[in-house]
Image 1 (cartoon, helix red, strand yellow):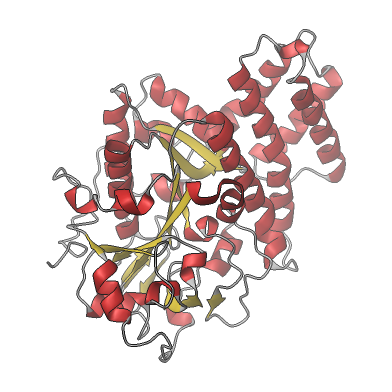
Image 2: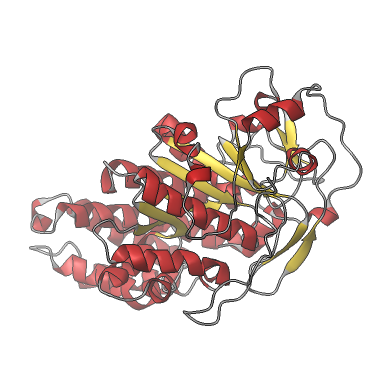
Length: 450
């Protein structure tokens, strides 16, 4: 995760919003929202069933990938809401893979650890970014993962990110690649090739870009190994393993480019953002088509990564433009079409804050925005479908909403997302210090008022 880049995408709203924007969407907007809203009992995980979420079955339809987007990795209410939807998708709609915005290798290693008997929080903490795993609001998810792991229908963990995101890669990646090479008869890499790959990977697991010579030598060696995996020398390696490692080796150059770009302040947003997200979209497409060809996948990520092409989204932040930005969601949706369904969270006022101590106020939403209308209609926790919105209605038109960094932006949103999940009150993520710690009570702030 590049914190400098993410900060440009998640500017606190108090710094960028002033005044009221007039709506040009007609007088029937509130009627449309009221008629379309799926009103929920709560967004907090509980044991009282999913009857209120049942209408989502028709909204999602036959989509095989549901992306659950969050605003800025700092929204405790959103983490809880995503968890409840994950429980519903797994238990009621047969989704059985959970793909995190974290490393492809790290999450694979974490899943192997869960399958070997390690509790989900401990295992997932070795692979998934700590901005989630150190949040108490993830406790209901890891508890559910533990329950499901003991059944014949577990929720399998994977990741799509090109980055190396946890201790799993630091502890095991180099050894596993060296071991993979040795399984060839003959091995693809000789001693010199193994040394070049090792020097290259050693830099990456430390979070630094290798110099130009080390990069060229390392990537040449890994490309040689990847090509050899398709040949007779590695025929005894299971096909699924060969496919995984070819995708993993393919993703590392994007991470290297990202690391090199992160130190530069002169690059436009697309050059900073696109290498990671384009590779992420390619990996997610591979997961859907090859790794899990007959299964249904939930994606946990920032909305900025989930949205289809952000060209056409107009931030009210001076100087910020998404022109030329290619998101993971756009790359995947271009390949997979309507198999991808994007559900992004938005909220009313409150406070956002991440587990590293940064927090800020989320002010009242701008007049005429989606969030302000949901508040004024007293809908409580709800989901607003957009994919099926008829032409000429509010949902099919341009309006203000705050799915990206809690900042108000204008767009014809159904071009970018398929539904919004609205939480009336935002509360920050809180730190989880032990396996047994649970999130603080939210006092019903995001329960329905009906």
